[in-house]
Image (cartoon, rainbow, N blue to C red; front, side, top):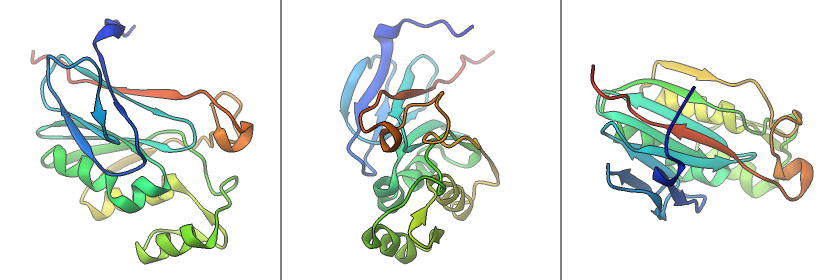
Length: 178
């Protein structure tokens, strides 16, 4: 079981962008506005909150980062910032998020995805597929992605499905050296 002091959890005010904050061992609570948190030392536990946006975890030689990647963050470069923060990337995971089956968007979003060379299907986009494409372009060879759609699966919170919603928390931390 994961045990930690919830008062030591480090979070950010998420703004649907690509700003990054580096988490230090003395940080706790909300430390600023950002959509990417990077952890380079053991001790702190960083968390992002999602409903339909994708939680993206990137591990590398210099640490671990977690990104809150909705369509705006995908376009703005949140995942690229996470990859840059960890040194040589070793692996990444894209967590549960909304998928194209439930994510109909306007022409502005389709145009933004097309300009960014991200997959779009008619009037739908898939944040998980887009995140995977970005990770692979950034040189991450080992990428895993959750298959669940947060809108289809009632076990998850979904703003698209419910209109108002709670959030899932994605947590990352580094283990102390052994």
